[in-house]
Image 1 (cartoon, rainbow, N blue to C red):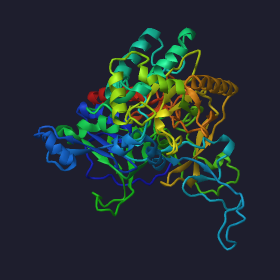
Image 2 (cartoon, rainbow, N blue to C red):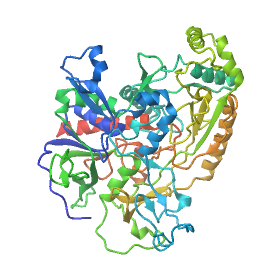
Image 3 (cartoon, rainbow, N blue to C red):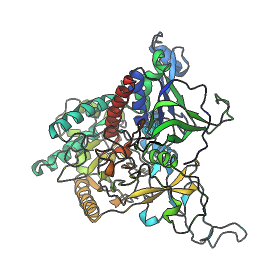
Length: 608
């Protein structure tokens, strides 16, 4: 291990819990611990670049007239970071413009170098070659493109991916996806029911927010009718959002809704510190000197990435923070990356061509780190709704009491519009849940991803997106290795994927594609250039298993309370703790783990 440790910062004393990462998982740890009276310091590698304004508790709230002036500058208000960027009015009005926001927020994890010659390049210009490949900003000459998750990406900033996520919060299927927290099935069900109820409250989940959308009901009720005799369930997606007073808009929830009290409640603000643009480089390990196998974290090494800015609160660029307990919840990749870097040895050998394991970090203290990784094979298409469905709008085909008034108001105002659906009619948000018979998660909706934008010449009221997410079996050989000699853009060990699907994974993926096509054609015809296709591996952004939690040290990194094996004060959080293969969006389940782990931390510290 490296022996050179930074000085402990004098400003940050009496910290109970240090947290690396400010996404919804890290935010949940922070909220639970601060609510319990603990002092928390949270470190985020990125900036706070999205805010909402909330009234400070104990202050007079301005009138609604005052709020229309500018809530950001009214006395008695405070900015809360980690706001969902899709809430901005320009994206509520045009969801396709949000695609570029997502693209801008994502950084690809591992990019294989390309040694293809560029014959039209100026001959005097520098060109890479087999002997001197480019290595900056995630370009990785060790990455085998046939083993890569080529679209796997991360978001750095307060709120993490929750600042642009879909807000889909389904519960895992208990027979396939959901991990075991207790060997007794009845007790396990009780634990999960309690955790899921808490997590849904934390995120503000609902499946009612699109009930009065014409498009939503066209899609939902058409599919319910088509599959009624086949035993297939179609229902609204459960989403972390709530409808605003203007019924055509929703507010999407993100980390800010979890962190809110830590900023607005003066008593809680005293116990909470957030450092932005600060990289958690590693945790400082004191190895057991008595042969009992227990190690202790004695500090977290933090580097201020913008030490010369006006917002810098101290002069030290790199320093250590001492706490009683340490939580690493920086995303599935970065959490494993920090733990690997914490075990990086001081060695001095030259890199070896071909990606030999000798140039990767030896994670001997956590031998299962970044093994058994899982991701989601994904199929996608877009359809243009069938003419018969659009013409049925005038007839109120489902006899819904609010429907005729919406159609009449639109046709009166826009008599020349051939589509009698209001321009601001909320989008469809439908799913057919993961099941034993159909083991994949589905999203039949209209939303913005890093792909799938619709041309301006097409009326997006006609478009429905279908995204189906499969699962892969956890296998030890599927893993990430971290390089000794190549670094990412943030000077951390470069991750390299070694991932292959099993034959069963491949067969399920084909069956999923066939199912998606069957569902799609019940609604309309394929949009040209958006026919059914498999997406680049990693594009679902639901990587898991990197710090998997489970009942035995043999094939897990942490126990079921997310406490790392053989460490007495180190916990992990995020999608990386999930040890099973799954198709559904994992955030709700990861929040469950964070709630459970937080309770364990609180109980442990209360004993001290």
